Length: 261
Length: 363
Image (cartoon, rainbow over all chains, first blue to last red; front, side):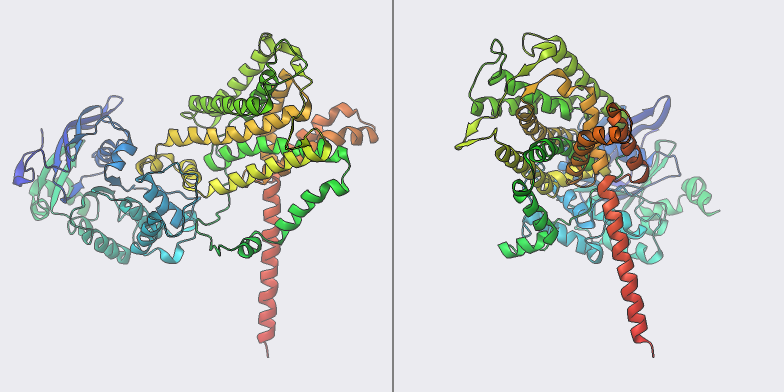
């Protein structure tokens, strides 16, 4: 079973931001992903839904190169990145956030963001200290502002509240010039107010930045995307617009039904 | 192995006044008093203390500093730093002048020393490249294996390393009109190199490279997800640390006047680890404090033990026990103890101030 070419979500092959063709990932004998074929246009926002163990995070790990896929081809803006190490994909404009915050707990908030800005710039090995007016310093300052972390700019990240760490997680993904972002359960553990802030941050991203979001909270997920991919047991099970997925009887039974009752 | 003592945050953008007065004020009174004491030391200390204690501690401190840089900022416990220093020392003897005239090439010091530092740094970098893909105990094993291999190579090779007896008759050169063999001159040379190495580590730790290294310590996977090449950063860290260790090795061979396999044997390799851990891996000053304590113990525990009727040869026992106590009670080393005391003092002052305020507001 492969994904149906439904709804005109796939236009032309050349212009896609992200294109997966027959991607599979084995952990020993276990197929965590099988035959994933997926295309996302530049600027498109898509949710990947599915129960626990459906392979959503593994899909992210294959796209970023944290785990290379066992089979298949991954193209990023037309370029075959299947064999690239993570940092090469990141330098081409791919970003991700982690389900469990993955930050530098021994460094300050600002240093975390500054490192993220450095990572995609030149002179990563610079032995010279940056000047205060350096462009990257400015960029890092405004990112800290953008995710409402300016009051805790100089605090060690290990000392931050959980919600603040989640916000920092997003700031790291927005650093540099992202072209496509993978959000892995950004709302997990956030309060209702923080969820509203998150929806605001996601919907106010520049329109050329596309993303895929894994999210269990339907109120968040379906409000910030224009298309949905359903996964089940490591395969793509259905694709459609949010309102279609919400009312699809099969989906209701497999995922939403299970979740609500 | 988790090196749990992350260096204290300094803040990438400390407010900088930019002028000299601001710079002087920023470093604090204790820094200037400490510097003045070190600079004026030849006026108060005997030649023995100047060279055998302070200069020796500065040299060992530099080698331990190179380990502190890797372990404290990079989470890499490398046992190869003493070997890098040993190789640099050997190369000074081989390329320069020594009593072993059939091997030494008698190149002038200003050719021999830079080449020695260059080759030793290259050696440290290659050792790093071999070990960076491993973590924790495996890094220790690989670097220990390299260190042991180098020890046995120097012990068994006579054509280059002159085997068991090694080299003697190596003297510090005479340049800038100064004979660096002199007590005061050598003290200032060692002190100057140590201060420069210390400053370099402090500076680089706040530069993008040092910051990224601390990122790879906290979270290597995320560093890759930010666009950094983690392995390349770790190898570069080995290069930087190896320059410091190599310079210290050159000073060490001048200090000892001789070079033999025992200088970089497994014992001294482990001693460097002890010095760095006892001093504290959290701050660049730690290794120097550890080295001073180590040198003092080595020098005086023999007499002290005999004074209380024990065999003076048991001084290693004293060092071992001290190591055990510090690791048990302060994972941050001696620097960690100092910081905890200062923190307690500050807190008790805060409470006192708070109590006085409360009392003052009373009716």
